Length: 170
Image (cartoon, rainbow, N blue to C red; front, side, top):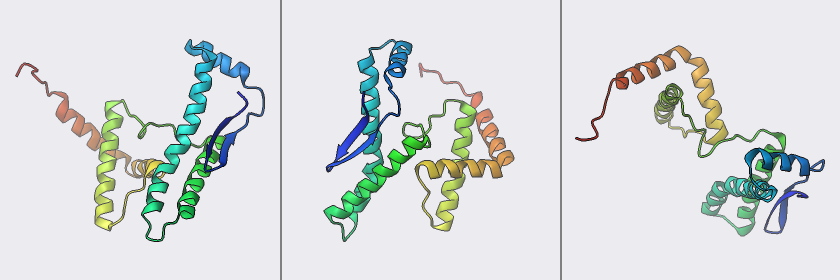
């Protein structure tokens, strides 16, 4: 594999390895018990999909502007893809799938409490909630500033439903 690349509108968004990735890819393939070609496919597909995902919302928003032109839409797409590529290279892109998946019931409830607080505060102030990494950062700030209240409410809600049992034959 010489590079990870995706081309849109004649512009290539690529990551070129600084050393030969053959051994690393072979190590991953061995660890996952799949052929090297599978790891290469996943790397290339993930690169392409991440860039496309990053551009979807900005492209949609740019096309809804009253003065939208093909150039302004292409510029929004390029900006989003370039920003995502920079984040991938810097190692700052968040790892998630439709949001960070929380499997721990307590952490899930903490998130629900924080999201409720944020939604009420946003509505009261007439502001929109941020999305993506900004929302994740805001959740962290709210939790840090209100740890006792948030975690206490989460425990209270979990306790209230922990004794509930469902009879599936009803």
